[in-house]
Amino acid sequence: MSAIEPSPARRLTSETEAIEVARQVAAQIAELAADPRNNGQLPRRQAELLSSSGLTAIAVPAQFGGLGASVQTVVETVRLVSTADGGVGQLLQIHNVMLRGIFTGYPDDVRDRLIADVLAGKRFGNALAEVGGKNKFALKTRVERRADGQWLLNGSKFYSTGSYLAEWISLTAASEDGGVGVLLHRDTPGLTLVDDWQAFGQQNSVSGTVNFDDIVLDERYLTRRSGPMKRTGLTFPQILHAAIDTGIAAGALQAAVEYLREHARAWVESGVERASDEPHVIRQIGEYAVALRGAESVLREAAR
Image (cartoon, rainbow, N blue to C red; front, side, top):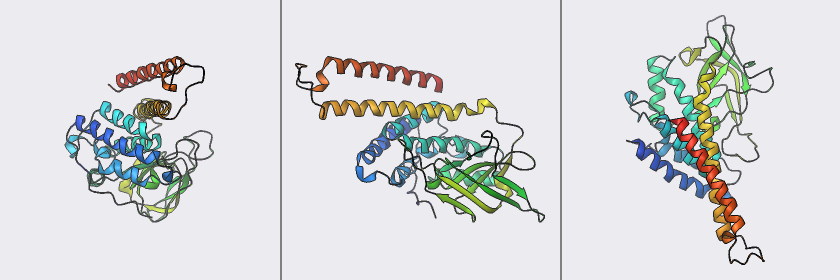
């Protein structure tokens, strides 16, 4: 199955423009999220909006033809998209995390191809987690070298955020020499992407299953790891997770206020015409808004 062919991606020229475009894209995604006809549907249109807007390319460094956006701007774009749909925000989050890995450890021609794809609007997904095992580093997915020198990949992953709609899948596997990282194009023979993600709440991260069946690897797309990942290596994905959560909170507050203004009825003994004018409602919304502003301030400071 091939990914949807993205429209030509817009080239964003400043961080201010990137944030404004993220607001515009979030408004379009919010309309899609509000339409019950989209319930249970794959977020193809939402993913296409991320790509065609240029948001998926802003983290490409300037020396490689990208905007070279700061962490602050990347965090803010993920937060804004997540106010409309946290699952779509997670598509952008995992893409930015996986994107960081292509600038080291690969030959220049591989790196340049991947960068060209990202600038054209192609996206990254991940295939890291596995079912079972003592911990997340006890991988059953393996890369093994055959007698003829070819590398074979076999195994299965779940919770593979973004992969079902991505062009490139970034995964981890075990080998005789330790852990390895592998990049696979979605059309690689032996790769199967399964749309089996069922979740309460965040539907649109399409975090389904990915299977690997005797995949012959191009060694240029394989990187070897020396020892376990440094814990500080998780700070970037975690601040983007915080951006998703903060965005979800802002979207929930906005939805609550709109409901109170447009649909809720005032308590019969409140003495006011609208539920949004009730003192207890105003107090609760105000407390929520203050907590949200505090979270947003902490997020911005952490990003800086």
